[in-house]
Length: 171
Image 1 (cartoon, rainbow, N blue to C red):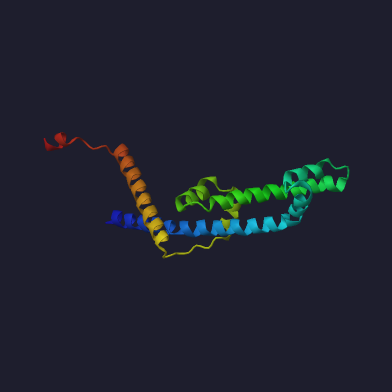
Image 2: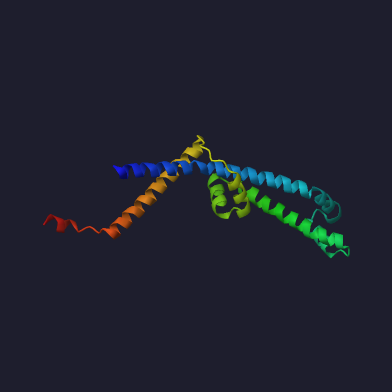
């Protein structure tokens, strides 16, 4: 009986964890989109300068600043370069979040930018969504978690307490 309750509890935990997945993915996507807009706004003046003098190429603008005789421009080259790299990173993240749900999930779990994922995690509020995708994730995670734990438990039990063969018990 205790084993049944443990299974139910394990299933419930898996369900509750699973319904968090779509909410976290959505929070990550919103965070990336907001940071991307912020980065684009920060580069707007530099992009206009690059359009006017360097055919819109930000790398040429940064290199021009870097090779300038003026130490102020040389210092600004580092700042502008960092802004350009950040904007590119956020653009790549935003593009990744425009793909299908399974690709988004994989990206957030495995390939997402660590610092962005940490920022989202720090501000994430756990919630129980009753949207179809949240329910599907919940049931899927619950089943996988229950199956994995059950399989590990059975494997461990068979190693610790091996059974005699059926023929030996009939004698």
